[in-house]
Image 1 (cartoon, rainbow, N blue to C red):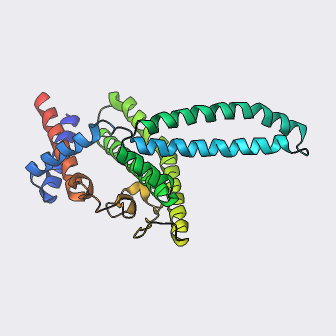
Image 2: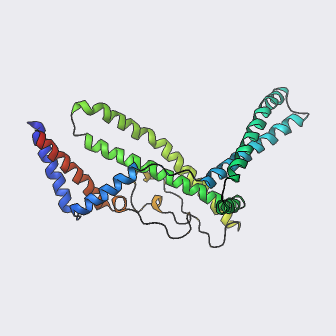
Image 3: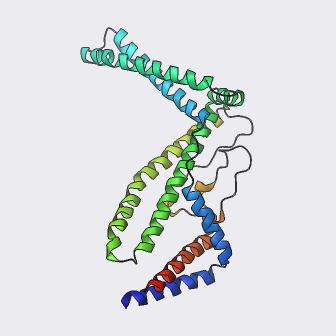
Length: 273
């Protein structure tokens, strides 16, 4: 009987939120459908130009390492242990460098005229390369933050369930906790790229009309406030940034969707009692 009373209390609380959120059930259901489609849609195909930029950066890193090993080997004053270590590692670096060069050549040969022009533009402008990498990082960061927010919502809902769901709850709680360090690291990496772009901008190495994006405020980033700079792509994309969907940007809509799902769940449980 206790479960019946709890179910009624939860349903009435959800209905109260539905009345106060100011959204119609038709709108809430439409936005919930859009939210579900967004969360379950497959990942976009990997961009060939972005992948090639990453491969070029990896190759540049290997070239730098090869030069360092060559310098150690050629220097008569290099200690024996460092000389031996450089000699052993140089072969694998050269092999990896050759593999990467072949891979880059193959992928660049498959590019169309437009993609080829975009690649050349990015390779010749470090500001544009940093901007592209920053946008990719920010999009990834947003996805991780969304996932964490939805997992927290799931924990909040499952808190009221029976004991046999505790294993699922524990798994979700562990998942939420494990995401925090990775998200913090992504945010720091993004801010570092913003620093790089600002330095290039100050040196006059940014394209005409370019805008430097704002750094992320790390304090409170996990709150996922709709006004946070995490949602802004100003300075990262050409043209006007797309508007955020209501299920994400409108707190009343977000609260209404949660209440709608909670009420429907309670009604289903009442039917089965």
